Image (cartoon, rainbow, N blue to C red; front, side):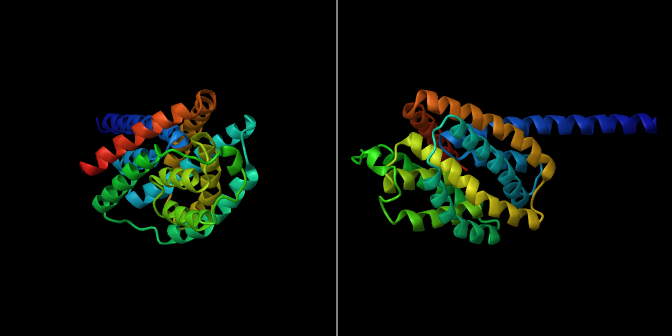
Length: 261
């Protein structure tokens, strides 16, 4: 009787792990798709892990593995499609590293309520600015010469991304669109490479501190890789219009959620 109960318990536990894995895999795929198009996907993956019983700080660290794999997959897809500007991406990404290191070192739990309120306001602001006419020509913005403000802006991006990551895509998009005068398709391309570059030192810091659940990280990464690949393919095929649609939907839904919780 005891032996039978033991195996029943073992089977139930294994089934729970399988279900949890499938949920996290799905969350990773959807989140990565959203991240490639706009941003905010980390809220979905971190929230899912917390619901599965992972401590918030560990969920924050574990999410970085998925972010690196997802953006890495997106970067490789952009490169395969020959839609890159590696020199500019490297300069922008390198500028974000100092802030990312500082942010990750001081990454601690903050008030979820305050964070959600601030992030909702930021998202609504970015949503409004996305529809301000951009008079600069993209052809004149293909070199890193539009504004020196992009450098301190990238330090701030790194600081925020290293600290919490959630919603950093929106911030990157706002800076690149209005300081560099890029269209949304080119903004998304650079965003992917920037996140890849600054996430490497952040991941090292979280790993050394033992704030990563490697089992969930592997499952999350598989979902992230698939979601990123599909997202980039659709973005390159459909152009800026589909990126803007996904961006608006993502911002509105997240802002509503943050303001009502």
